[in-house]
Image 1 (cartoon, rainbow, N blue to C red):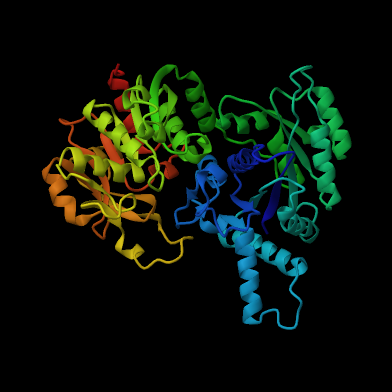
Image 2 (tube, helix red, strand yellow):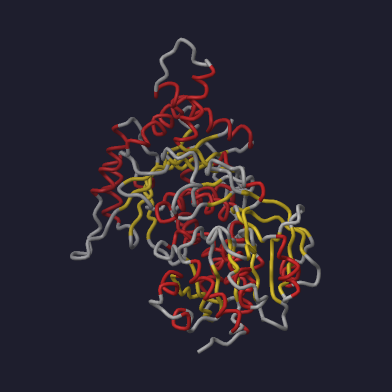
Length: 538
């Protein structure tokens, strides 16, 4: 029988529940247990796919094409696993299922209510995932903040599961903020106390408290939190600020967190093998040679929009022993003329043209790509960045005046990027893009092949538009190299020959999704390695 760990949050959102959940899973896995992990999002959207990145941050795509919360990216990176769309449960999924059952007559004669029908559906989804995956422990992070009205059914379901699973079958970890007053330097515990009080008001007594704070939790603050939470002091853990999120599991392990959780679940408290993780963190902290990476995008005001890309850069930098400095370039600033492309990209060693949708900022990205190509600055384009690299090449090298993507200009004379045929009859936006992992055949002798050292790779997709096959011959004749193909003949990877550019590679899929701390994504490693060789312009 699987055991369950529920992670809740208090005081404010984005307090760090995702990293605590991922760290808990990592520590238990390092102890030799089989661990699964799940994110519950109380929003009514069925998934994160239709959300603006400014509202919710990055949409993380799973191997099977689930459009999920960005925390699943942290889970995959920390636990080195491939998750599925079932590892992200939303209010939308729950209510959709309950209403479908009601319409089919499965609740015939009953008044369908939050309790028991909605809570039963939630419990069924959680247990079904644990049973299907055969894990010893399933970590379940409940999104939002305790007290949010939309989260109440999920907390009630978790409360019921503790009763049904027995005292060692379910364990509750509460993550809450203890702010430090700048005027006095005092750590204030009242927000944590009120957060725990709200949790207990709905019937949940936490087993452990993880306190987010700027500096290590003081002894007096720990005692006070333990007292008001009806817990021993050893159940209160400090999760203070660190340089890298990857230090959090080590920080918690130093305090005996893994032993306390194992004890609460009635499991043997084995010594975790964290040697590889320690080595990775040490590489990150030792890296000193700086490279500056230009991040050209349209959602740069919220860095969480590009979370997986930021972490993929970090993974590659640890392997190469470099310290990346990110220079954020808002493509709309180039497009509007507020910044010249030379100013925007000055001092960089390499650049990533970031994913995104829609017309806004597209011309700014195209100008940036032209500058990067003409000045031989190493460049990686991802998804929309790849499509715009094709547009730039078509206009300025292949001589196709007015070339564009039909997403930007439906009336372009040269639609070098066009809607996928499979998308032409799509009438609903949610979950209808080309999504998830699929095979890509790399062409031997190309840069892409040398990076992956494999003829067939699997990367994850999230797009509706593709390079128009009618223009491939003209683009190749002008010098563009198609180095990756899908089985259906879709263009997956493009590049320039080494004699034309030291490193210009662009991918339709998102290689950042599969980057891991101990196994960096090859395109990111290649970009940083090329940046080390290239002197910064200007």
